[in-house]
Every structure is written in C-alpha cells, then in structure tokens.
Length: 82
Image (cartoon, rainbow, N blue to C red; front, side):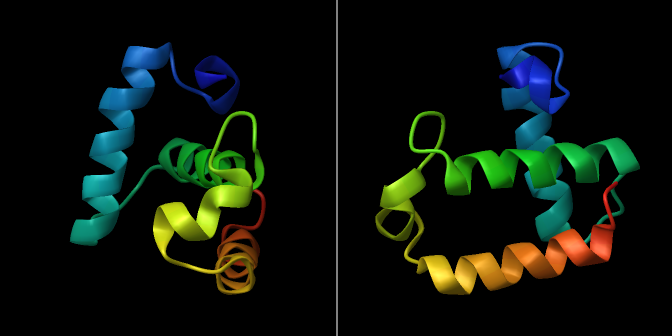
C-alpha cells in the first residue's frame, strides 16, 4: 500500500510521512507529490476499515465522520486532483 500511495516502501512512508506532517503543521510549502501522498494517505486512513481507521475514525481522532468528510472534500476541491 505504501508503494501504491507513492512512497518507495514502508520505511519511506514512515519517514516521509512524518516530514510531510511536520511541514504541514509548520505551514511550509509542499511539493505536488507531497500533497498527493498526504491526501491519498488521509483518504485511505479515514475510509478504510482494513488499512486505516475506518469505522473507528472518531475514536482514533476525536473528530466525527461528518466533520472530517467536509474537511476532506474541501481539501480535495482545493487540490483539484493533484
């Protein structure tokens, strides 16, 4: 799955994932590839009960599905299919 999302392997997903998260939190610029990987990772973790948090999303994050879906759709629209 890490490769399908755009990482070299699981270690790269972990390392680059932390870097991307740090860059987002700090307000630093992301490359198109970073945006794509961040969005796809979020989509998988939010929606998939097999590969992500799925039905436990609200327990995992403290955010309800409706709130998260509105935010996710907003990001998807802003990124326009990076």
